[in-house]
Image (tube, rainbow, N blue to C red; front, top):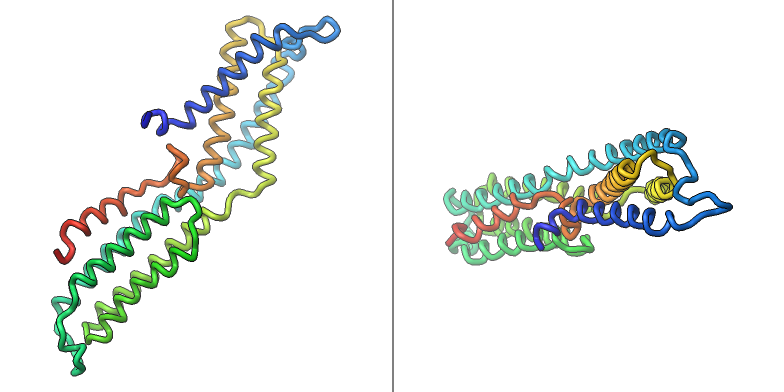
Length: 270
């Protein structure tokens, strides 16, 4: 089952190819209009230019979505790197000498509180990325919790470099997650999807009424072209939202954040 889910585009495209092939051979080959068989209305040579133009349009839109996907691939690693840096700054806060004369400056830093806060932030980011809605009212307040660690240190006279480092990494992480939010929420323009769907419908409709020289060519060309166009369409739709984890095989790799969380839980301020 997992193998099928990880190959969802291939499976869906194969099903579409088999459906069109079956429709043509078991339905359209039994239909005729004024004595002309439905599956022999058009010669293949008459419509090859349509297939060429359709592939060109699909290629342009695929290139447009790939640019966003390439940028999206970097975000999980960058977020994990910023969380790792915040963890290191917290370690520095425990090691570096503290300044100030207030009672708060004299008390020991609460390692349990800091550990819980950073794990909560990490878990919240992972849960937000895995969520369907990508709610901004969830992620941005969560990022501010990282700055609360900096405020906690500032009140207790912790080394200023550690406070500055936490704030800088928090701001960088906010930019990265804002970009992820924008990519996830702003889908490709609707007219482009209408164009793709129209081309897909026209191509499959033409394949149903196209005449081939041999049955073998009929089976092979009809199934191959249907498979390719369906695959390209599903690929573009999937690449348009690379943070849709439920899409199966078209999403960004979240291993950097997941692996960071494993390290965080196992060794951070234990």
